[in-house]
Image 1: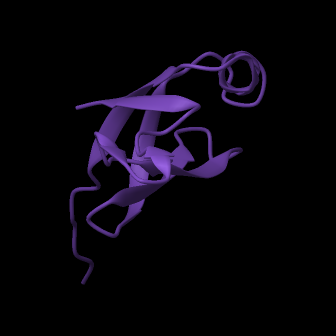
Image 2: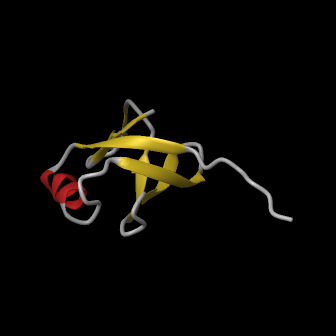
Length: 77
């Protein structure tokens, strides 16, 4: 007997040219990703086609080290 569970998905928006390239090529233009891990300040995401895995910071604001938000991706819930 199997069981089912829902995997949370998010949509990402590229902010850098590197991220735009990954979205167009490796992710095949699909911005929907599955959350593999949530640390509370970062998400480890897998593209729906399972060809690209990456960390995205969900922090906002500025601290003494500079900008806390992710330089390459924006997460759109």
